[in-house]
Amino acid sequence: MSICVPQGIISLDNILPDEPLLMMGAGPVPIPAKVAAANGIVINHLGDTMAQIIEQVKVMSRYVFQTENGLILGVAGPGSAAMEMAVANLVRPGDNVLSICNGFFSSRLAEMAERLQANVSKVVIEERQAASAEAVEQHIIRTKPNVLTIVQGETSNTVHNAELEQICRVAKKHNCMVIVDAVCTLSTMELAMDDWGIDAVITGGQKGLSCIPGVSLVGFSEKAWNFIESRTDQLRHWCLDAKLGHQFWYKKSYHYTAPVSGILAIHEALRLVCTETLPVRFARHQRCSKALQAAIEGMGLELYVEQPARLNSVVGIRLPQDIIGKEVLRTMSNRYRVEISGSFGPNIIRIGQMGEQCRTHNLFRTIHALGSAFIDLGHKLDLPTGMAALESTLDNMR
Image (cartoon, rainbow, N blue to C red; front, side, top):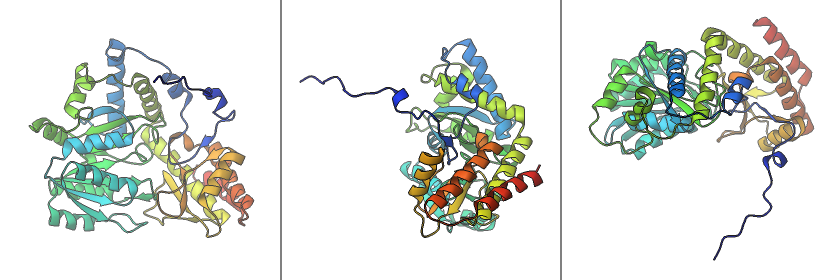
């Protein structure tokens, strides 16, 4: 029996829209032209040119992660692959792991540790609330974990663990290594790997860095790397074995065929971050996100999370009872060519404020599309007041 040639296949030109959607969801985000151009290049993954690019990626990453001596590794995979690399290399079977669970992605860290046969204690934080350093310390004293896992920002429900710095310092006091998921927050808000005592920082390319999906970064502290090198057991992951990854990233040797185009893209994304500088970038993100939030409330809609637990890089909007989230998303996408995100559980929609999303022209277009979609669906709100709040907040935060 032979397999027939597929029929009816059409080219991407006939599938993709003539006018691209403005990507204002929880990721991926729009990418700068320099990043897009780099992603179209293929070179030898073991040649001298790639070696020079890798060196610069490591130098720039140390600045973005804020680490002097941290060891940076790239991962051919999404942020979840970087997450799994950190967990697999720092968690051994039988280790005690304390997982701070604010929602979907922080719970994924706990599941990864459970799959490694660690003894995982989950601290489930009340919905819309951030973790408290004082409470976390009590759990550390009780469970004596080898490793603590936590997110800086929970993308799924837009909660920010605002006491992350204090939590990391508490863990360090008790000789507990800390893995921080910064997938939606790195380069959008302050995170100081060395100063806060973080042992592993995880990020994906497709959010704050404004790079492509599928290429991610992990930063390991000196303590974490010493632990990894001291392990005598065989890691259960091959592609995600940090010691094998080290062969490529630090010894110009073969591990697997590197995602060459993606590495070039993340080089350009990191270069743009370094050119802008972190303080300027943080201020841009805060200004744009605060203006977006003011516009949403100005229209008469309600933000899902109260301050100070509210995440700025992904903004959650509570849906009124008469509105179905999928209909809002469909109307915004089909009629106004703006795409935002739905929910992983709570009755909310989410708007991203990461990297290239944080541009004034994107905000005005997004608020117009959001308000117009609600009006089209029969819900009364005050779009002019929302637009005015957006403009005045941007002006006041210059």
